[in-house]
Length: 330
Image 1 (cartoon, one colour):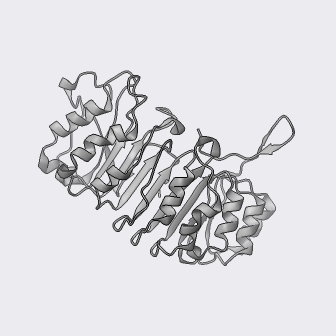
Image 2 (image 1 turned 90 degrees about the vertical axis):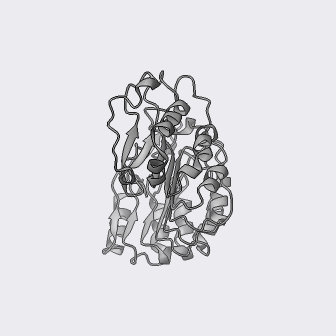
Image 3 (image 1 turned 45 degrees about the vertical axis):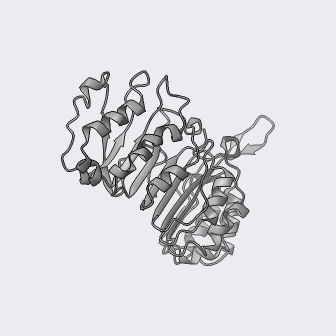
């Protein structure tokens, strides 16, 4: 689980992030600029990203990174982050274009276990503008990954198969394509403990229904799952109703339905479903639940860490209709 909502990663794979090349590098001859590269390679999650919108592009920077780091150093890397790749000249690059050099150099990263793709903040490029691709070549190049995360979802594709090593899987998006949700739900994850899906808005490539989540909610191929995040859902009440009777819930420690449009209907469904008192945490922050229903939740779950922060008020449209909104969309 990533604590912040689509902000730049500060840690990955349990390690602090070290970013290359730093800021304001204008000439590769100066690589890596004023940044002092740490010698204890294995103690950091390494992020390579562009420094300026009108500056050097990511492919040049990653090539310089490979030329600077010797084979022993890259072999020691366990966590790597593909950061912002967007410049004025590379806005059309897809994630496949960007991760291709990493795939080509996979033999230099034999111990890579934690990988994040597109650590791009909204101030750099909106999440819905990030251009993606089929992730299959990347995941197959690093079959021993234990943690994988990706931000953005346009043209994203996921291969339905077994992922025997993955422990944590995160999709951050303004709208996760239903085809991706179904492929994940139908894949096998014998070791996965944490699954986080930003389901998002149909206008930004989302639109999943509870039926798309069936394989996850049944839990058959997720035997070790302890954290389930079905976040940022525009149909959060429907999701909550499906979750309320889902077999997977009895095995969870943390259920996260935050960042979406959850209201009284969804909260009532949770209360009417299977007991949730075994949970360590129920995260509902950024919600539209009334105060009386919030109090009912508190009374029903006295021993659960219940996050009801960020109560939102719906937008009032010109026709008088109320509109609830997700936290992360464009």
